[in-house]
Amino acid sequence: MPWTYENPPAVAENWTEEEQRRCVDAANAVIEETGDDEQAIFACIRAAGKEGGKMKNKKTFRGPLEWKADADTTGQFTAAFATLGVVDHDGDVTVKGAFEEGQEAVIEPWNHNYGAPPVGKGVIRVDGDKALVDGKFFLETPAGLEHYRVVKALGDMQEWSYTYSIEEQSFGKFEEREVRFLRKLDVWGIAPVQRGAGIDTFTVGLKGAKAALASHSTATSDVGWDGPANGARVRSGENEAYYRRIFAWMDPEGDPTVKATYRFIHHEVSGDGAPGAANVRACTSAIGVLNGGRGGTTIPDADRQGVWNHLARHLRDAEVEPPELKAAGLSARDGEGEPDGETGDGKPSGLRPSTVRVRAEVDLVELGS
Ligand SMILES: [Zn+2]
Image (cartoon, rainbow, N blue to C red; front, side, top):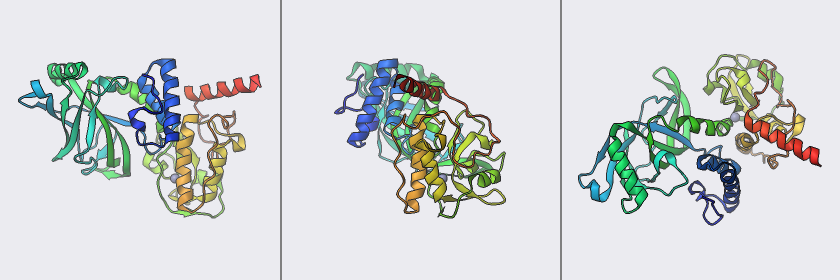
């Protein structure tokens, strides 16, 4: 459905007018081109620069569902949609307290179909190590009734999936493994899904958005910056949590244990390879590269805002006003001028489709002008 400034996608409800306008324009353009609601929502999120902190994530869970005795007339059910305190298949541990008890959540149509209205609603609660939703299907609507009947008939053959953004996270060890702890989540919606369905398409859709590494607050430093020297001290064969303390972008298709997968180094690295303070000069020069300096960057346009957010947070922590991010498209140039610290031990930057498209557009503009 085409969205309007007065009626933006639900994700944009609490955004500023400017963000909503960018979201609606981008989402409608994608709908017109592809008819794909899910991709449209991603485009909306990216266009509004929300992919850094407010990125949409999804997890699927197979758990028990109980219908209330009078479900045929009320549509009421209770479903477990997450288990707390265990490592899930994404390597995440959702800690107790991550879900806000009493938070209302929309029950989304089958497989998170954003093109259709919600089919129910529910309230989140936690019982032991399970996150539950006490929900009801809107039996008074044809879609709500249909979902109720299908979910009831499918029984074990379906799973639940919820979409959320991460409000608070940390990295650390859990049962001998390096994991990400999800400490506070904002649940956007819960949907019945076919087992295994949609997971791959979602992963693909998220790739661009995942590439900018989440902003964090660390110590800062304004001493001189020698990028290549710091880059050379970065250890090889470490895990993602290690590289996240040094870089601001990762190639989602790269091997997370290889340092060449990462770009935009901006943390000082000690002689033994330990990550340290964010360097103010490195952050400033990296934003220059995002804006086309030193030959510009080859990362996809959609990732630039997230990288900028990361670097800008460090600068603000150091009480330095970050240089603005120039409009997308102005910075895309052929060139390998990543910030100082490209150590030359990496593979050439893998061009993903979005990168290629941006470049093609730039080429057209340049040819046509
Ligand atoms: Zn950083």
